[in-house]
Amino acid sequence: MNGQIWVTGGDKLAKFDKQGQFIDEFSLGDFIAFFVDERCYLTEKRTRKEQDTHKQIIIKRIKETNEIEEGPILIEGTNLGMIRLPRGGFGDSWGTPDIEYAVDRMEKKIYVTMKTEYKIYVKDQEGQTLYVIEKPYKPIRLSSKDKETVLEFFIQRQSDRKQMYLNAYPDELMAIKEMKVLPKGYLAVYWISGLKEYMIDIFDESGKYVYMIESPEKYPLDVADFYDFGFTTVETLDDFPVYVEYRIKNLPEIFNVPSD
Image (cartoon, rainbow, N blue to C red; front, side, top):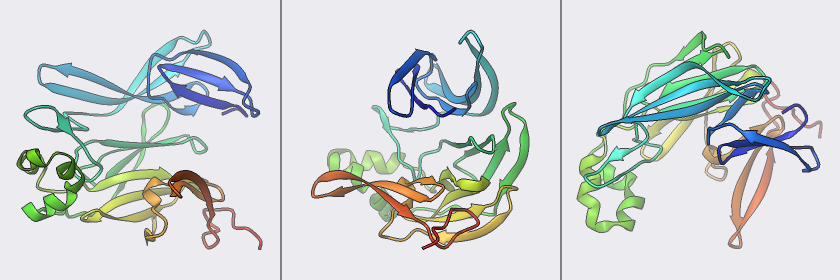
C-alpha cells in the first residue's frame, strides 16, 4: 500500500518500507482488516444475544487523526461460521453457512456473498451495490455416507463423537466455497461441484461470465494467492514448507504472459 508493507494483526496496523524497516504503527481496534485503500478497510463485527451470534461485514475508515469511523454494513447474518454441537461446535469450507468476501484494491471493488447461494454483490467503498453476479445453482444433497466422507478429518480426530457430527452437519453443501480477486478486474468464484470438489467460474471487470476452469490436481488453487504473473502456494518438500511461484502462460487477458 502506497509503496509500503502494511501488516495487520493484534488489533493494530504496522507500516514498513520496502526493505522491511519499521515506520510506525497505531491501533485499529480490529483484529481483521482488509484494506481497500489507505483510509478504508473491511472488517468483521460479531455480537452475541443469548445463544445466537450475529456477524456483520462492515466498512471502516481511518480519519486524519487516526481515529476509526464505522461505515456501512455490507452484509450480515445470524449463527454463521460454525456448526453447533451440544458442546461447542466446528466448521469447514464445504457445508458451514458463512459469509465470503474479497477486496479488489486496484478496482476499488468489494465482493460479498452468503455461501448458501450463488449470488455475489459487488459494492463500492460507500457500500453501494454496483452490480450483482448471479448464476443458477442446484445444491448438492448429502447422504449419511457422503457426510462421513466430508467429515472424515473430524471423525478421525474424535471417533467417539462421530454420530454427533453426522447429526449436526447440514443436509446440503454450500454453493460458494470462496472467491479470489484476479488481476485486471477479473474475479474467480470457487463453487462446490461435488464432495470435496470445486470448479472455478471466471468473471470479467463488468461481472460478465467468461469461462469455467477445473482446478488441476497438481496445483490446489484453493490455497493459491494470485498476482499479475500467476499464483503462489506454500507446499511441503521434505517435511519443510516451501514458497513456490507459478507463471500462467495462456491467459494474457488476465495475467502478464512472459515473452519466452
